[in-house]
Structures are given as structure tokens and as C-alpha cells.
Length: 107
Length: 119
Image 1 (tube, rainbow over the protein chains, first blue to last red):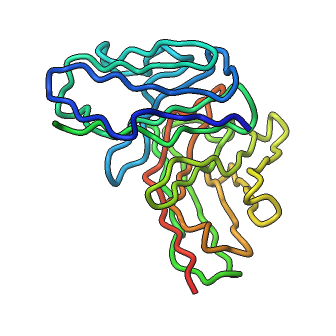
Image 2 (cartoon, chains in turn brown, purple):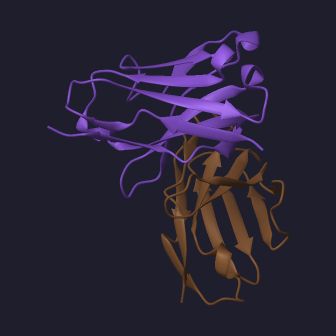
Image 3 (tube, each protein chain N blue to C red):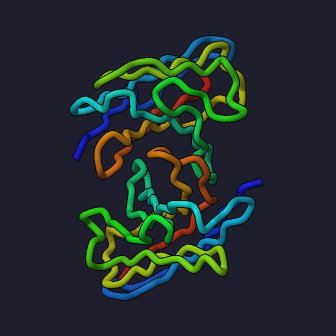
């Protein structure tokens, strides 16, 4: 199965700054990659699919890029509600697999 | 509004059984491919298995760690998804999420049900 690796594990950022999260696949997943946000005590929420398409209601400050094995989620002008854990997931190959997550915390 | 609500979690001993239920609302449940995803304490998300809509054959597939021990089923008349977990192991301890699958990604998630397997 495809192994997804996210880095860093924790990212400390000040409100208003930009956060850059990385997700790497052990083999090409084409553009079949999604990002989810998870807050404590809640289920994950879909943020981005097909590498760069924002889900309904997701603000434009969230931008997904990449292809093949290297992907990035950029969060511009971080707001208080953006501090959470972000997971990437590939759906190019069965079974679908997730990265270990990146926690974005307030610096 | 789409809602997925899990129930049935709890404490079980190794070798025991539990059944989780998930009621869906706000969408056409019978047409949806439904999935279970789990998250062990301090770990990432892990896909457990999926069941297709009956219109697409209604078959279920499972991740290797649970194949032969877990069974996914659905009752579309009740808008309900099930996860029967048998021969439980301590490593099955996790929060289990009921999830709607959409073209590969997962667009709606429940709040999760805690399953603890301990002697």
C-alpha cells in the first residue's frame, strides 16, 4: 500500500502568518489527494480534494498544490479557527491511506 | 444538512465482540458508498473498510488488519450502516468514524464512537 508521510509533525505559527504543510507519497498518486482538518473531539472535515479543489464553504486562504508524490497545503493569513490537525489522504490506489497528520498550533 | 451519528461503542475484552451503528440523514443513504475509518490514540487515520451501494453491487472490502474479523453491512430502509467487530484485539482500540465516500475522498464524517479493548 502507498505510505503517506506528512511533515512537520507540529508547526508553530503566529496568527496572520502563513503555514506550509507537506505531504509525500511513497509512489505517485497522480492528483488523487485530499486534505482534512480535524479539531479536538470532532471528526475530520473535508477541506480539499483532487489536490487543489476546495470543498464547499472552505475559504480561499487554503490552497492545495502538487502532483505525483509531493503535495503542499498552504494556509495564508492564519485565523484562530485554523489551528487544528491536518491530514492528507491518497485515493489513487487501494486501499486509501492517510498521512500521520500535522498539528498547526499557535506560536 | 448531512448528518452521520454513530452509536454502540464501549469496552470489550480481547476476543470479544461489539457492533457499531451509524444513522445517516440529509442525503440519499441508499445511493452512498459508506466507509469506516478509525483513529487509535495519538495516531493517524486508518481506513477500515467500505460497503458499496446496493445499486453498485453492495459488496464490502476490508483493510488487512481487520479482514476476517470485522463485517460491514447496511440497512437502507433504516438509513443505517453497521460494523460488526469480532475477535477483538487490544490494537483495535480507537475512535471509529462513519464516513460517506465520494469519488475516492470522504466528504462527510460522523463524530466518532470510542471502542476500547482491554483485559
